[in-house]
Amino acid sequence: MKKVLFFIESLSGGGAEKVLTDLVSNLDATKYEITVCSLVDVGVYNDYLNSICTYKSILPNRDTLNALQKRVYGIRYNLIRKMPAKWLYSRFFKEKYDVEIAYIEGFATKIIGNSTNPNSKKIAWVHIDLYANHWTKTEYKNLQEEKEVYQNYDHIVSVAKSVQDAFSKRFGITNKLSVKYNPIDREDILSKAEKPLDNILPKKGIRLVTVGRLEDQKGYDRLLEIVKKLKSDGFVFELWIVGRGSQQSDLENYISDNDLHDVVTLQGFQKNPYQFVSASDAFVCSSRSEGFSTVVTEALILGKPVVATDCSGMTELLGDNEYGLITENDTESLYIGLKKFLSDASLRVHYTEKSKERSVDFDINAIVKSIEELL
Figure (cartoon, rainbow, N blue to C red):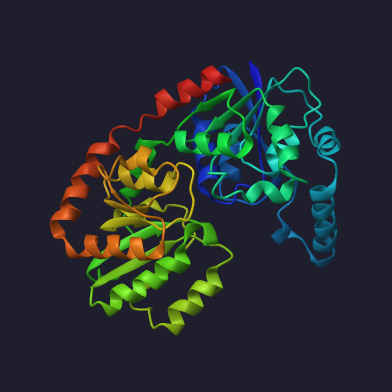
């Protein structure tokens, strides 16, 4: 059996973390002995992963510590972020693995890229457009250092062709690249979506839903601006935002200041977001940048029409507006797109049918098999 290590910063509930969980649970257990290691023991998938593979973390969950332990934790965390990556690797990973995978950009990629195990195959996963959103640069001294880390890998996987193109444009690396779409468990999603929601008020017109971390990347600040305009236009609709993140209080303040409580509901993090998507009339992706959007894929699996901004992976998912409505990636264009969608019942019916048509294309077995060939 091959010993495979996946390293990730945390399992905090984002799309990459969910996809990793689906991937690990579908890899052939007779071929691979899998370890998932996170930097911090935070997330919603930890217990489940521990039941199907070896799961461990370098640091504990900060929320479980007392005041003194939290101070020590803070010191350790800051030291880890500053220490040489090669030294950290040798300290973190005493066991020898046949395959070592950095499953997220940034810190995890830097650590595995400095592996002291000369016999392992090293794979980096890229989930986002690093040309449009070069968020990983804070982990490195300069662009050259980051490029050199990637050159230490045997293979670099991107989750969409557009993500791969952006990666090559950023780092000038054109070899050892491949595209592997996210493995998503279609049957599991459909099963979970069947469970009815409790204590949900009747719909107020068309119900829009979006799912994601409450961070700048997801564009919920501009989505609320659009909601305000659409309400002023007289449209009868509501928006559910499912997720949590650092912008929570900012979004709450905007909703309060602009009297949007009757339109917008922040649903918080949900272990089963598919119930919420299933109970909606359409899915909205307002992201400033993406890789290959897990939540848009899930919305299509559930047969929901999609309105999305034009970021990486969207044309691969939705075609040239064939399976969903793609707008330019700015506030005004998304506003116009949503206004058109809310105004035109025939358009909503059309994209509902096209979404159902696209739904059958997501075969997790074929995708996992192609990833196993890489390992």
